[in-house]
Image (cartoon, rainbow, N blue to C red):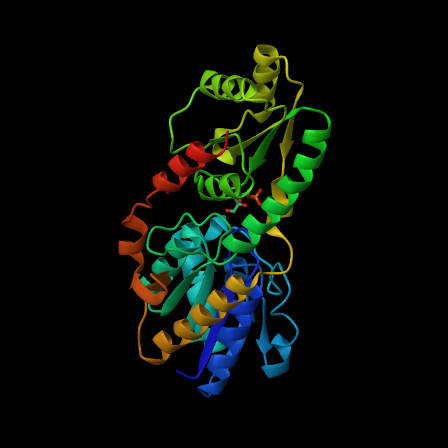
Length: 319
Ligand code: F6P
């Protein structure tokens, strides 16, 4: 293989740049040339790409976001888009592709692999919602960002004897919620994976009030929504002044943590080795600290389990 492409797709995640750097440098070391494809699969369809040299990826390991830009690409879900992308690869001499993104991006990588362009996918999403891997690039940084913000929120919540209902990201997965919830000592954590009623939350607040608690942090996973509504109901039932805070996209930014830089570097290196060894249609992950790879379709069919034990521990110790 003489030339490969790399792209980032879907929502950005801190550590994507570290992965781009690792892929580029590993490929160069193996005597390949590397094209950085811009704005996800759109760049492949439109031929929007730039050659990446050794120094093109200098000074990016510490930067959040992605130097290649990212996007979600509807056109790539259809045959016409896939054929345009394949034609670009053939025209540019791109013989293999590394795709960094979430499960939507994996589907595209599988479809393109099936059309003769070998693709390797890396899990890059703050949500950690991909079943075949214990860890997705960006997850640790996003959680640390959310934790730092919730700590700040606690200062004002405590000063005013209030209740803060904090919504964290995660799409339909509650991993960020349960981990930041436990790390911030939240009074209650609401995640889609655990059945709940607002009455349960109110009851818990009231029971902690009897032991002298005056301020409350309730962490809510994005998929639940309704943070304002939950805050209103808590205020009505308990008399505790309540505010809802949606942390939002700030959780996706910032310098990646050590963990994200290291995992992204490891995964990027591993992805190129797979291409060098003739693999296609694989997604890279990390299980029990080791790199693993799976067929993309198989990986997409897996179901992610939830940290029920961690949730129970949070409920046992934060009151
Ligand atoms: O998948 C990452 C994520 O940040 C989710 O947590 C969130 O639901 C979604 O992306 C937001 O997407 P957008 O950037 O399109 O608003």
